[in-house]
Image (tube, rainbow, N blue to C red; front, side):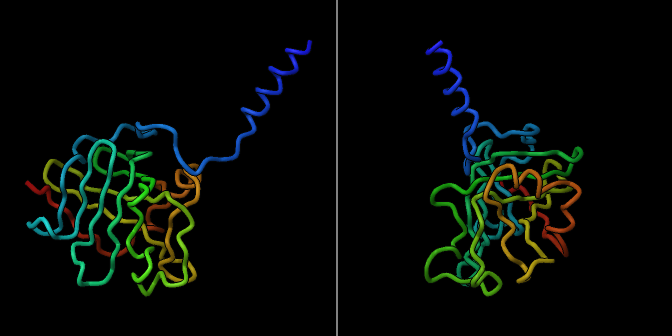
Length: 184
């Protein structure tokens, strides 16, 4: 009987873990990442232009202009992908240790984010119109927040999956997104 209680206590402790801030898998959850997304994507036909580098596990973004002062470059591990159809979907990343947007570092500011701390390490990127040579990739931004454009990151993986959906994409993506071309 003594051992039964110990086993039960272990199961209770194991089942009562706090929600994690990280995901314990190297493989993205959800749908498989569309292999057509893997590659280098740029808004202009030059390597230092705004764009994305996507592997099967990592997504990195550069705003393409250090002089602009945006400092929005980031990098994250792909944790979840959801295909809405054959050409559209969402990718949720978890920022890597050194991959948080640069405006989060001391000395870097973006006026819309000043005084607005990032809530967590999970971030969504929507894609649409995917084909072999082009795609429209869009960083999420919150247009209807107070202050406007507050960071839409989430603290937990579960929150990110609930937040970045096909039904909510119009809340996070608005206006003109620049199509990206595959960089050779």
